[in-house]
Image 1: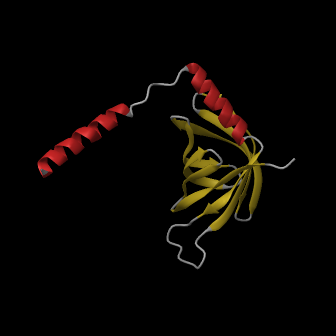
Image 2 (image 1 turned 90 degrees about the vertical axis):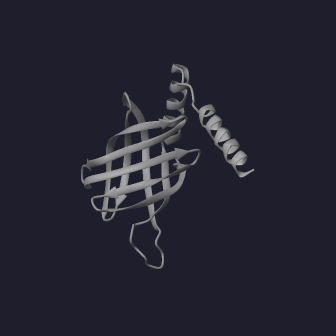
Image 3 (image 1 turned 180 degrees about the horizontal axis):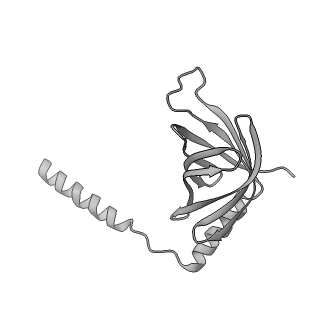
Amino acid sequence: MSRFFLTGFALLTMSAAFSVIAEEPSAEQIAAREKQFSEQMSKCVLIGSFTVDGKTDENPLKEERYEIESVVKVTGNLWTFNTRVKYGDKDVKLPVTVPVEWAGSTPMVSLTNASLPGLGSEFSARVLFHDDRYAGTWQHGKVGGHMFGRITKQKE
């Protein structure tokens, strides 16, 4: 009986895996998802929290806020985020050009060992954007953690 169950489970799992393989999106679908992403991320604020690996104080969550004026596709998978970043005692406005990868309709910023003018170097992150939320991981040199929060529109 258990051999039958395992065989059936294996076949079911394999058939499910094959049925998940998605077709490549059409040019129209790509244009629509990119337009939606640009509109969602323009004039918005990411408000949330981040953790620092290894920190065990009473409140391991730290507040974060990123103001985004606009997000524009440059070429290929490169997008420019025109941002205001508050990081430690720094408060700077700067354009940040980063790769955006897609998992179906879900965009993800993929930053690896980047330098950000006025903020330093060795910044890495993987951040997913879904509906009105974001979540991901971050790394600055040897320090890293998780980040998550809500995407809200800026008030005029």
